[in-house]
Amino acid sequence: MGRAENRRKQRADRLYFNKMSIKVTPDELQRMSERTSRDAGRYDTEVLLTAFALTLHDKFGFGFSRVEKALSGVDEMLGKVLSDEINIEDMKERLKNEVGINITA
Image (cartoon, rainbow, N blue to C red):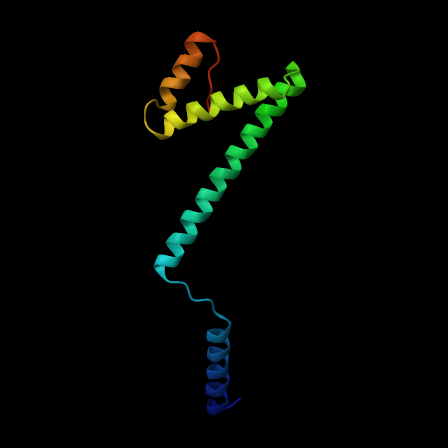
């Protein structure tokens, strides 16, 4: 393959690569990252609350009313955490002192 043919092939490859590329601005990348993080957090919370509700029902026979009350209590507590009224370390310490359960990740 001669030099001219080589250049034509390189140019064709560049054009193809540029055509097939997806261009993302830094702002778009940041928004995508934030959305992914937010969606993952929502999914984790959904899984945790569903597992909690099903455990209350399966293991302890809780029906709709008691499961709903428990989930409302959890939701209220999460609201306090999000509004910085309480923090997770205080909650973990209280759980350890009052119930004797230590939660670690």
